[in-house]
Length: 73
Image (cartoon, rainbow, N blue to C red):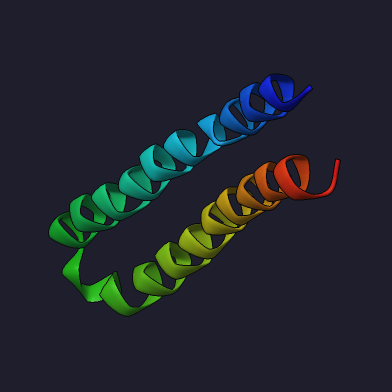
């Protein structure tokens, strides 16, 4: 049973890699957009922070699931 918990927690943390890729995409798009239109930098930064927060929330949910699998079940 302990081995199954470890495998489940490991599978739950795969989402953290996806979240890291998503955060990289958010900020690379911000850099490209600001380079194309520097006058909209403040507005674009607000959108980038929103995208970062939503992507980071997914990572926190995945981490929470991994901890729940390890320590609760």
